[in-house]
Length: 301
Image (cartoon, rainbow, N blue to C red; front, side, top):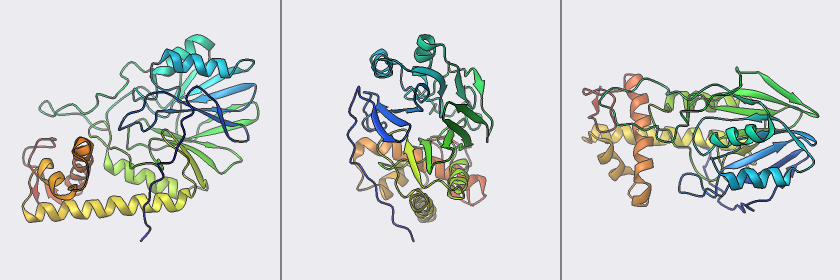
């Protein structure tokens, strides 16, 4: 079974454009947190007339630093992997400053409708986000010396896209695959079934190195994706076993299987457990007599 190990070595170099590969540069936004690591990575593709991927949060300083670093060049296109507030609001500032069109899958939406009783888990959603150009799976955004292919990767967010850089082994993976940590899946905003299917989709692609939305590169992407999937399957089996042993709530399951995780991260762990439970209910492996609720009851099928 592939072993999953994380790489947390990363220098954000705030305010600087860091060269990563021919025609690829990165600037990290100064929005560090337990969920964003050192901050959101903004990528610049091309030279002269460039594409910018994920301008980041609504941070005037970050956009100003990006424009200053690109003095003498022109932003021709803005691409957004997904509409969470650490990735997409900066697109509005950058578009206003440059006139470049914003490309993305579409406005923010949930993976499924939320029930009236269900606590909201989409507080990170950028509900005002509206791209100028909507990208279907396989669509190309082309510029001087580059072509970026949109790869539909729902799971973390329903409108999540990755972008493959044609003619290279590189894929901009957004928050779907990251080297520093596993991805948070928070229903109804995201969906575990979609996330797992998107992992399979990436595993079948030829790219070997990913540039994620947070942290450093994923250098052996195929092996890392296999390890991520194995990790999720192990977690799924552990959750099923806790249900069989009598645990009935997300909180009880988190207390049992995340004993060694800092308490400050138990909220995120609970969302991950809930995502697995939702998937298991959908596959008929467990039941949810009160409906799909973060604070609901879950029972053996």
